[in-house]
Figure 1 (cartoon, rainbow over the protein chains, first blue to last red):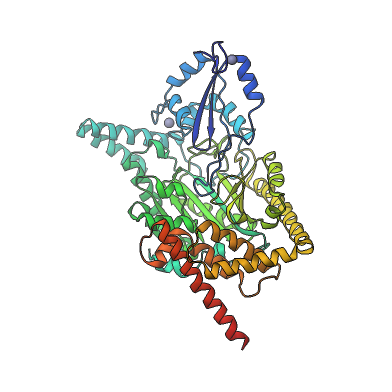
Figure 2 (figure 1 turned 90 degrees about the horizontal axis):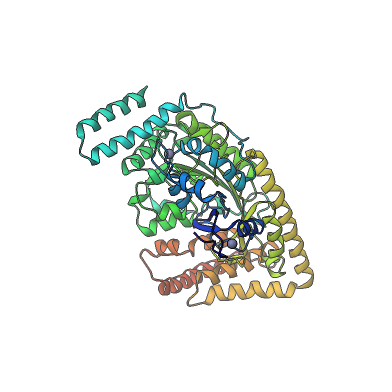
Length: 170
Length: 359
Ligand SMILES: [Zn+2]
Ligand SMILES: [Zn+2]
């Protein structure tokens, strides 16, 4: 793929989330550097109303990665909810809490880019999940049950449902 | 839920009371939370969404802090009813417009609202009238404590509260203060003030309007970052900046009162004139006229109207409220006519009652 601003091959792929919109840029090294150096702070902030999306913030998610790295990474899927890294890049939304663990390596520079840091220092729940393994197992079991129902494998679905009930009440 | 009950009073955040109410309309905090044992909304099946709804509902009913709250199934409301809740800021545009199982729990006197199945499983919101971040935080923090005793939130040691969008992760907290800045707008200083805010990671938005020229001179300031700072630090940052802006706005008002008093009085009188005699009026024009009046009241240039009048009119001339009071659906053209009639009635009622009190 060619750089969007010159004839050189694009080696940097930048995904930006501005508000709800996703923008992708494919740039050569020089243009990527130029781009990163002067990301306009306000020009690309779309006018929006507080209540259109009160929670949305106009920040940018940038993922400078080489093309090979990115192509490989895009294929990677979360074992719990099934979302691929590509889908995350497209929508800017994760599929389940486990994605933060599964994609942690890629996520840390991204969070540093958005927030400047990637270590939470605020409030924490007094009562933590006893074992997060149980929680993620519930997520994937519910998905498996749904898939079994879609494939009309009702016996399998009911076995999974029993296992879910067991976990929920334990 | 009885929408007529809702309509009887303006929202509590619009009482026009509280500290610094001459400049600050309201203080609002929202917290984003997700249940640990469900996928985030975008990967949810219908069954998942129903499961989230019922889990939250089950844990809340019978709780003392939840007494006299109402659960509303948003997916069963009409478009007009959903819009009404948006205008009262009880639900977001997103919750109003997206499809699928979703709901909102609203506390007595609109003291808090809980949106279920918005972008995150749970969005907790507390609003106060005036500049009252400490009390707003204390209330929402306590509510969040109650909820987490019964619900298992998705939380990560390093990343904090996990959210569907990485821009909300960490504290999951968005603090917003709505400001009325007519004098800074009139003296062309508003852009300068806001440009300086972007450098310190605060977001400014005009209310309802596009771009920096906001309708009714109303602006909302929020924190942009959610990770790496404690809730108290985030609150302190917003507080510091808003305190400065309040001082700027008051200085600009004093300056206008000294240099351009006749112009201010003229604006206020014309505003009353138009509002009480127009035959058709848009919501934009109404907001702009209300802005002149609001400032006029605080500068003692307007005596025949009070702040609670301005706030009531502000809310009741918005499209869904107007139609609900009218009792049916109206297109834009008819809404503008109905709005003018509502305003005539309201202002004539005020002038009659002020006449009789003088006799
Ligand atoms: Zn290039
Ligand atoms: Zn996942």
